[in-house]
Image (cartoon, one colour):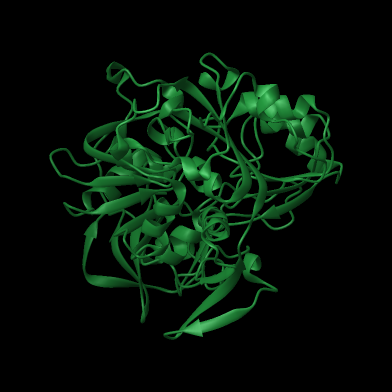
Length: 225
Length: 226
């Protein structure tokens, strides 16, 4: 079977698609890796739900106490010149009010119509926890899901209909996996990029919703990271 | 002369009663007013409702209130984090009521409570199980759910700096929920790292104006200062 991208390579590849000047929120998990692999020299303003615009990976030399400045995953981060701080109600005005260009979210399942499930596993004994996921799914102008193409048990994460509790209906525009980049369109799921050695049939066999291949599809590639 | 400064955390939390609805600032441990929460836990109060982003972690702050059996209900967006042992034990024993609210909806419900707005509509949660049972209404072809304001009896917050009137400024992302909670309660109590003389804060840097703050206590080296 063709080798897919690592999580860091997935995050790197997604970062190449973020246009200069974009305001971008990164969810916890794989999405936060995008911060570490953002394209150098491109001005992208990363938003954190806990009241930060303009975060960058932690620079130990910044003199900021780690507890005073974190990302949504509660890990320490640093600020770029031009960064701004604000409280939670304002932060979610940015999210809910359609001011964010892109929210990058992890996913348990994405359906062919863009339904997203990423907050709760059915029947799990542990308490549910939603954080800002539903606000982001409902409010960002574009929602890009990033996840492994298949779960540890091999189950496809891209499905006809989500069987897990929804985070938001018809939220996702684009899906980045270790095997492919797939657009959610009114005509169904369209593969923009895929691992070159993997046939469309091979990719389809690992996906539980119908795929079509874009005429101008390209190989999915990333450098060693 | 107005002086909202208290001499100790214990003095600052005087008068809070069993069954109180307490709004708590913080995101993870950042900006959580742990010394005030520890002082509330030391009073042995019962049946509190805590409104916060998380369920606390470790042995201070919300974690201590939970472990001490003070809390009947937790309203939050993300109760499970590394170290949220006290919450998880109570949840397993079904010894706590949990209301999961999307993070932005908590912020807006509390903001609305402080702003005199009883309810409002958001797209967040529409078409999900967190929207079930709530009034739905369509605007411009899209589904919205009605959410009610939350009002606190008490808000317990943390800031970096205060003056004796209770004007507050914050430190980086330790601001988070604190200014929102400050506006939403009958009695707002702030622990700060430093009190400065009146006039010692640039009016442009004051994030929470004194009108929202009732009590201030300076705790320069408390457990919540990292």
